[in-house]
Image 1 (cartoon, rainbow, N blue to C red):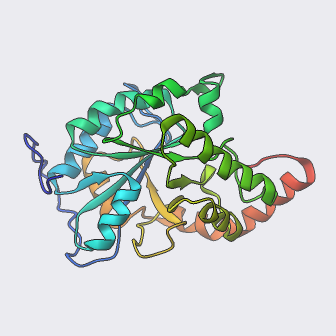
Image 2: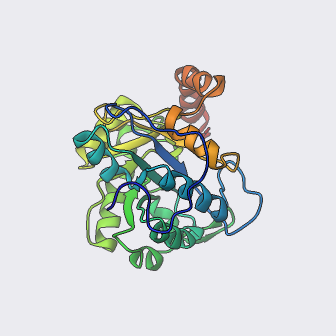
Length: 276
């Protein structure tokens, strides 16, 4: 893939987000739903806005890659201007993202909960089907696992975690012909035990939420990501990949995580209630 601006790109006049030529950070963007239009929400960024965001990134010299390739490139070339792009949950509107990936000479990792693929039409939203996944162009889309059932793994018994991690990998391998190497923890929750289980299952990397820039040489099973929302215009997304999520909210959420995990663990083990 070429570096720098892609052919026909419109240069966006914005403050440069260039990081140092020698650095150890990798911005990884997290998307969920990508509707064709509408105002969007924290988990739904309309495709016209994604188009503008990616156009700004490409015009500023960034390459957009799936997580596994982004990590590899960032490790071998710390000065490379690489952005990891990920989509969670397997919403059917991801099919509309394929044209954007092609137009921007980009790649993304798509994390699929395999139970959603078994029942693509549900009350909480339409999901991709196995037939949809089989038709996804592999040169544009890396398929990753999002467990079998989309539920936090860090409060489950170890046997259940092993099943979620291994069964989803096996199902994907059977249906797409290759074993996925990238994993995404549902709701971003993990623990040392969960990460060890993911590693033992054969995955090469896994991502959390994190809300900060990733260290390519850090723990490959706890790669942090940055949440993209409709509030990120061209300038906003350039700032995001340069500085990460700013303000007190990301810090407070990280600080609150240990206590919140204790609450969630007690709710699940005591009353069978899954808190997210």
